[in-house]
Length: 175
Ligand SMILES: [Zn+2]
Image 1 (cartoon, rainbow, N blue to C red):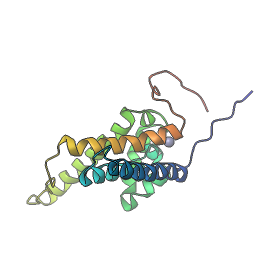
Image 2 (image 1 turned 90 degrees about the vertical axis):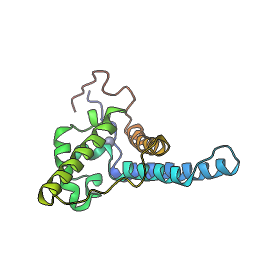
Image 3 (image 1 turned 60 degrees about the horizontal axis):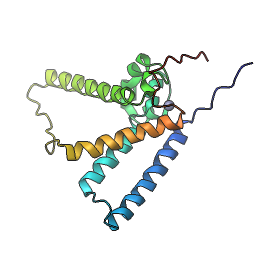
């Protein structure tokens, strides 16, 4: 007997789940800091929020479908086609949907894209001044950003029904 595939949430459903969690976290954080339970600076909150939103809308695990049409690729606008090679490299819900390496593959891919763009610009325009980081990257900035990014990714994976040991066990299913 064929067992039916578990239904996979659409991009829209993922966005709703992530943004609802975001709102709950925001209200919770404001409440907890008013009670003096936590202290979050505005800079930390904004780094968390930016990374979380980028993880939700721009760096979703479903970019592994970028060889076709997918929400998270569309969010890149005219830059969307830059994600086509990523979609071709990663099979849907494979490594791209693992808990630790998956989110890192997208950051590394983005860094490579950035390096290529800078390399090309530098070749065409050698005197180009590179934008400097506005402030030294320290753990106070990196930690909330890392948390925000990974949380957005993990909510996607949980909604997809993917467990943290995904990819560690051999569970190749043919659909
Ligand atoms: Zn997915």
